[in-house]
Amino acid sequence: MTPQPLVDQYQRHLNYLRISITDRCNLRCVYCMPRELIPKLDHAEVLRYEEILRTAAVAARMGVRKLRVTGGEPLVRRDACDLLAALTRLPGIREVSLTTNGVLLERHLDAIRAAGVRRINVSLDSLRPERYAAITGGDHFDAVWRGLEAALDHGLAPVKINVVALRGVNEDDLADFARLTLTHPFHVRFIEQMPIGQAALQVERPLLTPEIRARIAALGPLAPVASAPLDGPAERCRLPGAVGEIGFISAISHHFCARCNRLRLTARGGLRPCLLSDREEDLRAVRHKPSGHLVGAGPEAAVGGQMSAIGG
Image (cartoon, rainbow, N blue to C red):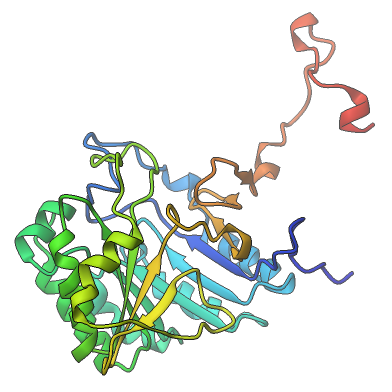
């Protein structure tokens, strides 16, 4: 039987799967991590590569055409590039990309390119090394910048830079990032900070896209750039004479839910239909099937729920 395409009840074609391969990271960004240490998944809880490949293959048969490998920081997981290579070989998959914080990017670039990956996103929220260290908790700015330059030298394209706009933190970096596109073929993406989890830097009044635009307005008018079929939600633009481009991801100020085409697979095997929702389906539920039931062992072993709803 041929699997049915992934089309939801709102007629959105879900052709993009983001895959988290680890919850571990070598940075502690203030908008991502809480101040206190949080427990990490046990090794046995994290999806094996074989399970990820099986899930991705099923998704491809159901119409998914784009995969993005994320984390945590995906490059801290051993043999991550082997997984990338296996994903690029899946029938039906047109694009496999990688999101990384860039700390380990330079040393893995040969393997990333050999895996068939040509598109990467690098998270970088300041071009000032001291501020970068304050945001991320690590003194790795030079390593990230070397990784970005090496990615261009290796022929990766596009090389995207994800910038989370943080009120009172990096507002005066935004124009510098936009100016970078005049001389480098980077695709800079300005992202509104989203209220997810218990981050050390809590969102009270996020810096929204109209304010970001105002910060970079002095550089010139922004001309729209047409989106490709598998593009994400960014509103793409280009400054006059720029070799790169600018994008705005406005999850707070301008919901793009009506054209959202993505699903997310968590490191422990949960399928999330929306980043900003706690709804999650456990794809490893079969592992919880017990060896036997306890009905008959006493009144406390009664089953909840109704047979009419469960099915006989």
